[in-house]
Image (cartoon, rainbow over all chains, first blue to last red):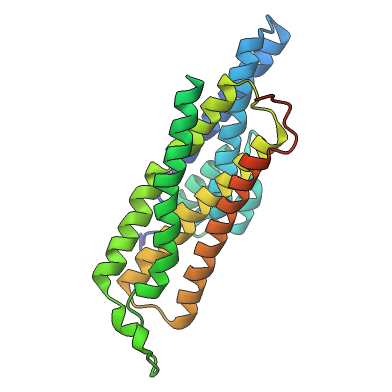
Length: 99
Length: 153
């Protein structure tokens, strides 16, 4: 009954989850910095980090095997895409992969 | 620091990405295939051992190749030119090349070794390797021409 559902591997989902958190954290850092002290070094370091993280998520969501088509489209949405993909995947798995 | 990062970036590009480009291009030529009735003399060179070696080169050097974008990003930050358009474009297509390698080329090679592929699948592998190499050619052109750069070297 509990056949292994086809989909991205668990380790890949972990990677996406970590990246999604990093994306959100870096954006938060950027915005907090913008509306408070607005230090240029923080902007210079965190901005590129945020971009690289987002880019990595997008490439994983487009190329990695196992994601469903809708998840791929949702996955490239900035900020929420990665988290959305992970939660949708986990939910689909918990409901026995027959969502 | 700048000189060190630049040397690391270029040397890693040559020594790590180069082998991946060659190995992934040669793989379809050497992996054993289903003979499908027709076999050319060149097919005698096909062997699982060679295919495994090429697959290993693709995989291991592909992982090592991560050094190239990391050194490149650090270099651009040190030089304060991260936001220049040619760097951003190069990063995007490099990421695409990385995704192609990790999620398309390497798994397809593993599948081809596990069960001998047909002619059509070999063609697909060759196409992927070709696209991968073309992307790197485009990146190198961007690195040399540097369109939109304000940096005075």
